[in-house]
Amino acid sequence: MKCAFCNVGSRGDLQPLVALALGFQAKGWDVVVISEERNRALAESFSLSFRAIAGDLAGIVFEEEHAEMLVKGRLLKMIQEMERRKKMSWDQALKDWVETTRDVQLIVSGPLTCNETYSLAEKLGVPWVPVMFGPYFPTREFPNPFVMESNWFSWLNLFSFNFFCWAMWQKQSSETNAFRAELGLEPLLCRRGMLSVVEEKELLMIGAFHEIFIPTQRVPADWKSHMLVRNFLFVPKTPEDSLDLEVQEFLAKSEGTGVIYLGLGSMPAPPKDLMELVRKIVQTLEVKAVLCAGWSGVTNSELEEILVVKSCPHDLLFPKCKVILHHAGVGTCAAALRSGVPSVCLPVLMDQFSNANQLAKLGVAPPSIPFRNVPSSHGAVLEAVRFALESVEMMAKAQEMSRRLEESDGTALCVEKILQTYFE
Image 1 (spheres, rainbow, N blue to C red):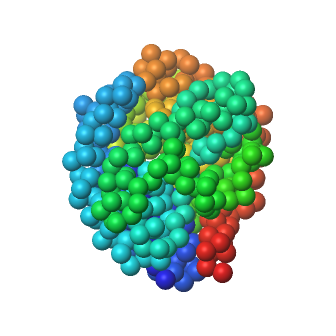
Image 2 (cartoon, helix red, strand yellow; image 1 turned 90 degrees about the horizontal axis):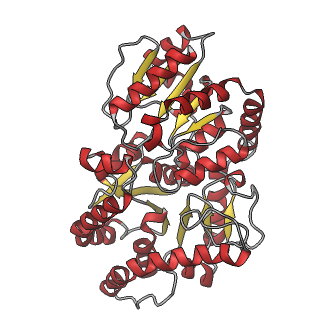
């Protein structure tokens, strides 16, 4: 039995699916990760088989011109450029999808590839399991954060989800149904795309998050039983001796001083802005810092109080820090919550703002500061870090959230549910 785990985008868009793939592999399944070439290294770092499709959805954010758009919040122009590039590789990508899934008996899909993978599963006659990374299934209890923030009326909350899915489907329906026609399938005539399909067929949908990540901190009463929420999907913990020797030595020298972490994941960030911020933090607050450069281009620091690394396993580094400054991507939020260490969130785009608000609501982070405001808001960032360093209550809250996440293995529970639903 072979299962395909599919999504496109950045590491954060694929790693929860890698966790599920490893869970299925442990059950004796043959697994394959299907994504763009950019993500091959991630899959192969876990010794998973990888198949590539055409395209590079996340590549645009690493180009200087478009990275600047992102940092300054000019999302519309950037999204338009991403759509243009997607069309350029679309025909080849569809051919690749057909070829790479030809021999599978189960398809598990991230949110960015649901339209294609559902159609492929229907053509192959195999089960299809969508995975959602945040609480974006319709409910009356809170609104869709992509549409509005205020929780006013239950009917309006529900409308915000349905309207968002309807609007997205208006953009996607033509190309999706053209692909279905090539596969010999009937067009989808639903009003809200995959949301309608999931609801009408009561298909199992995996929520790859813990209930503390839901605005109400509990599963909404109007979510049906086929919507499964157990915990974040973590890959196996990194062996302690895997931490880079340079990082180990830096942490050992920093005992008694306190170390903060600063990293924006796959988000682009001007090197000058990052270095200026971290320099002010270490000099003003008398701490040391690990700066995870990611794709920012920062390579080193003149100050011995700052260690610059290209990447570092969050599950090893975060618990050794006093405060974690990050962009509030779902994966980083999950790692920060599991570490039991307070956060300071510097969101860049999309769901990162609502994720940051949720951490503040949980009491594990002060109010967030958009990264685009950081160059003019160093004082606010410093005060947020100072508060997170000194707040006994925030540390206690962070440790409480960590304990809750450690109570269950989300990956194992989701694997079992999928197998029970479709293969027993």
